[in-house]
Image (cartoon, each protein chain N blue to C red):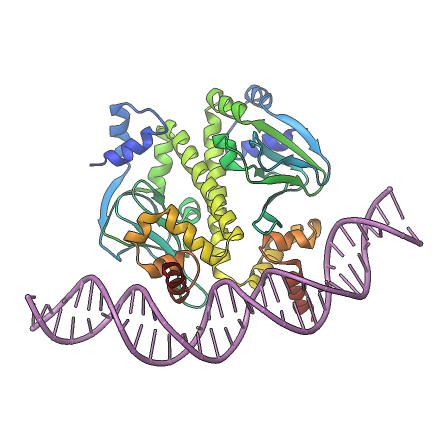
Length: 191
Length: 191
DNA sequence: CGGTCTCTTGACGGAGTTCAAAGCTAGTGG
DNA sequence: CCACTAGCTTTGAACTCCGTCAAGAGACCG
């Protein structure tokens, strides 16, 4: 069922069944296996992904050649390289399934047409991006305010589901430190 | 003149003169002196600020009691604590004029009414927030990818105007390191 | 010219990385 | 259903970047 996306849209705008049936035609439902890549560095990031079930992560290869995770997306979150998606430029990122994943994906052109045909959705995406922007600002504040150790504790208490579902080395990567150091922090907090 | 704001809106949507004249009534034009605070920690951040002339910065007092700058805004940029502005919650931030500043400011309720009355502007703000979100994601990528020293060099080459207009200790604060260390980096690059 | 704000310099310490190696776990094929 | 292997996690020692502290040198303002 695509009901998850419908429910999410309806948190911000009211839709008739008829509208919904038109809207859903712009999307494609796709499954990906664990570790499968949805997009690769160097490609143009043609789609925006809405997660119905599973976990995605976005990462890039840093200057030292190490995978650096910058975002996770779970159920009811959108994920894409916004910059590449909007401008049609090449992306520096990979998007990969952490677990087996079900998504609804929209291509850039369909996204733009969808907004033309259904201006109601301008409001939906305005709200979504406002929230996403506010969240990212909060994240920068945390990064600036807290030590790595504090960031881990904050993350593990505020997002406990991730600790269950995502391997430690990816958490370390997302928090921008080494698996070795994460291991050290965990030892400290247990004893 | 408020022509700066009008020009900015028209980058994303077409407006008749009549529409513009209605829209502008939702805004208030205000001047602030150097170092004057537009909002204070603990208040509700009631307005969103569009900079016509000058520079604003947003900062918070970190756990060590030090001012930590998280954003600058120059001409044609919006600045607010998005989270507080949207939800009406108390802000953790200060917004302060780095130079004498002219802004157009909208209150939260006027912003919401404006969007009701002029749905065209949903598109404008959707685009603005999309871009802001993409920019913040790029910023996190930079923070994760580069050493402090590289961050300074990247900042100074990509935003040279800020080096001219903003004192060094604020640049250091924005890049999340100490004025002492910034001084050391500068010495290295000169010799 | 005095005083406050900004920038520089240097010595020291600690949070977090790097490297190397061993222990664990889970997925795969036989 | 077990065994093997590749990938994940832990440990510890050495090292490094960058923050802290203290003090001095400019610069800008009344």
